[in-house]
Every structure is written in structure tokens, then in C-alpha cells.
Length: 99
Image 1 (cartoon, rainbow, N blue to C red):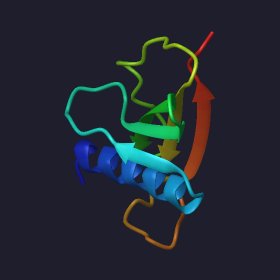
Image 2: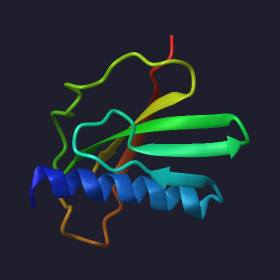
Image 3: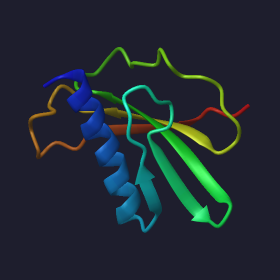
Image 4: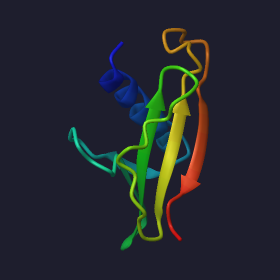
């Protein structure tokens, strides 16, 4: 599995969970981006999310993280070295990038 596939799996995992919670969220497509998911809470109120995926358990890829305004979050998804085992749920951590 490539790093690109791991990142896509992570982004779709987060997007799936948001939709399961009833959120209105969309995936932002592109190779070089800092916003992976846009979540609309109500008209004019959006949250942006940058997802960082990891097939293993260490070395989070955060080389393109920049401080953002309020309403931007980082979501770290670790597949714990078992990305191919569909019975294992990943660990997920959420951090705000606002000051």
C-alpha cells in the first residue's frame, strides 16, 4: 500500500464517521492541499479538517501543517500497523490548529 492510498483511506474513514454522525461534510480533492474535508455546520459556518494518515504507529506526516484560523482541525488516523485487517479500527486523534 502506498502513502497516497493510506492518506485516502484515512480521509475516507474520517469522512465516513462524520456522515455517520449526521454531519454535512465533503472531501476536497487534490494532491497538494492543507484542507482535506470541509464540514458545514450551518449557512456561513464551516469547519475545515486536515487528515494525516499512518499505516503504522509512528512518524506522523506533518510537514505541510500551518497555523490556521479558528475552525480548522487536524485529525490523525493511525491504522496501528494493521491497515490490511478490516476487523481493526484505527486510533483517531483530533487537534485544533487555532491559537
